[in-house]
Amino acid sequence: MILASLVDMSRLQFALTAMFHWIFVPLTIGLGVIIALMETYYVRTGNEFWKRTTRFWMKIFAINFAIGVATGIILEFQFGTNWSNYAWFVGDIFGAPLAIEGMLAFFLESTFFAIMFFGWNKVSKNVHLLSTWLVSLGTILSAFWILIANAWMQFPVGMEFNPDTVRNEMVDFWAVVTSPVAVNKFIHTATNAFVLGSVVVIGICCWYLLQKREEEFSRRSIKIAAVFGLISLVVLIWTGDGSAYHVGKKQPMKLAAMEGLYKSKEGTPLVAIGILNPRKDIRRMKEDSLSYMLESPYIFNISIPEGLSLLANRKMGTIVPGIEDILNGGYTYTNRNGEEKIAPPIEERMQRGRIAAEALATYNKARISGDEANMTEAKKVLDENFDHFGYAYIKDPVEIVPNVPLVFYSFRIMVILGGFFLLFFSLTIYFERKAIIGKQRWFQYLGIISIPLVYICSQCGWIVAEVGRQPWTIQDLLPVSASVSSVSSSAVLTTIILFFALFTALLAAEIGIMIKVIRKGPEA
Amino acid sequence: MEGSLIRRIWLFYYEGFRSMTLGKTLWAIILIKLFIMFFVLKLFFFKDAIREYETDNDKSQHIINELTINRK
Image 1 (tube, chains in turn red, orange):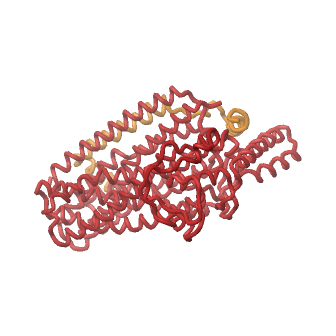
Image 2 (cartoon, chains in turn red, brown; image 1 turned 135 degrees about the horizontal axis):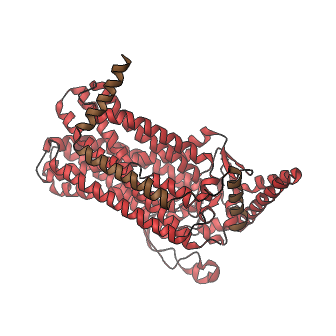
Image 3 (tube, chains in turn yellow, cyan; image 1 turned 135 degrees about the vertical axis):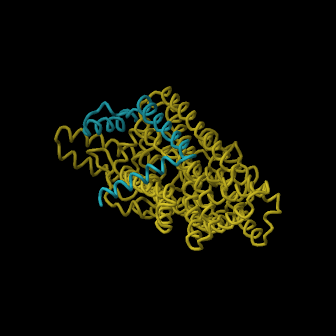
């Protein structure tokens, strides 16, 4: 029996590492494109102003890149140490995208990064510009491969389970790469990084304007960042809608948690703003069913009629399953073969999961003893029930419900801040066009405050995606309790402390160096 | 010609690194970070949990036992 504390601590460690890593990554991706756009202006106009501007933002890019580079490797260390069952079970599905990412990043970054920083007066303008765009493309492609691996965990397609090796083997590379979840997730995450980079540029420029310094530099940088940020945000919102649709079809429990939706009805509303009722706890459903039923899910809420039906089904008057509906089954969902199925109750999936695990054990025994007839029979049973394999490790149906308040509030913070940034970019463009941005001190303060807000928004997105899919490391196939290695909790705690100290030091170094460079300004 | 190309590439990097100002600090941070990650964290704290199993077959067997016996 694996202690819950080990699972929770391993999850905490992975979550903290991923969140720290995600502080650095989006700025690298977002700023990379903004720098490339600025340099394009320089090459097209020949105006030295754009060269100076590009070089300043390159410094900020370099600081962030240097501090953030390789921080994601700690996640890979954790796969081998804390999540060895998962790392083995996932097979080459995870290995292939990560290997491509590693090679691509090394090739692009070691070659073109050097030209970008050392080659200003040594290569032609066009070669330098090409290098800058390739570095930017390299950072985006790195994210692409990582997100493909992540999307596969949310919607495992293009593979077959091999009971001889207990690994999932890729049988259709393109199905993995072009999975609708992967494509949507990639565009959503990349545009999120573009928005973050834009807000950081505007925020830093607002600080200069507040100091009454570098007005031309700030105004021109703001102009590029605001337009780029607004376009990216529109795509971000569009793919956010796509994410909700895919989540509704493939991970309905995540959508139910995002909405705090327990029991559905035709024409399901979307909660715009709400406060959850802490006494509405699904764990009380069996123990004290009457008082559970009498509790409303919300203390307060403002809902958009039919909103969730439209978001999840693209159709009014339709049902979006709530947490209780999912536990009881009977709703329609999309399985990993892309087929629409009627979901069985979770109790039944648990039963079928246990049959699958038992068949795997029988297959293994038959394989060792060379009993081919039993192997064939066990393989047949395993294949028939493999879609429910992960439910073998679920002891109580309510274990498949993620942390509802964390997902619910994170989703709302993300959406509200997304709306705020739509207004923010629009106002920025308006003030800039009217040439009054230098006089709007309140707006300059708002620009600076927006820097932490955009990070909060971005992190909330990850919380929704990753906490919302709990308890699964691989949707329906492997829960966290079966993924974790048999290591001691104290060892995990030690590494949490160590990595926390390292990452905090890195973050402090980044902020410290950045402030120093920003204070010196673009002319330094 | 080939010799001169290699020399030009060498000089490109050599002069680039020599003329760095802020870059020197950043490189120091990168190297310290990589040292801590690979020579402290990886070596002493993040050992491969199934390293004791030499062959892939042994590793598979261990995971089968984990998934069909230990975690049930």
